[in-house]
Length: 236
Image 1: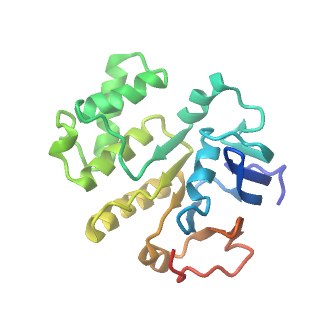
Image 2: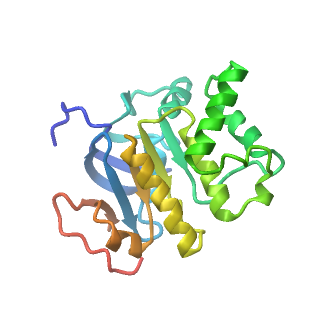
Image 3: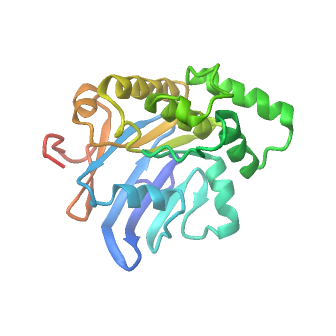
């Protein structure tokens, strides 16, 4: 791998840890701007730990890594919010505040990432809700939305700061197949508009239907379909 090139993510000879336990060894990969990449593997194989390391929720203890211009070897706690302004993070379990409206959920993230002008905040919120086809949902509470709509709110929230890449951890895992397909197509639209996507998934149908590049966590290693023949049919 050319570590002097300019992809959006660069990882070289990294170890991915949970506490003192090494989950993945000798991790080497890069992701280019505008690329769409699946991340697969059995439960406990390291997918979530890898994503958490990329958004600095877990420390990088071994090797080198850079994401959206931030060196994860040297990043300080006070710099983490600035890193996350340039990322979008989408979780499987939504993580919406149940006692706040859609608008309030989005405003919370905006305030946490440095937005202050209320007019600009309202305008940007309206833009991202339109982008995810929820233009009339600002005043609704999470419990008034379907699972698919809640996930679209999470995606809207992740798009607030026009991130260079979205890191998505099983974003369709809790959704019915038809709803999941619609959410996935939204990710495709976002990708086609210039945002890179790294999506962890167990959905074999997506993997078979869309021939994107695949990274697979397996037996402590990260395999890359660019350089290895990866099976997507193994149960995990």
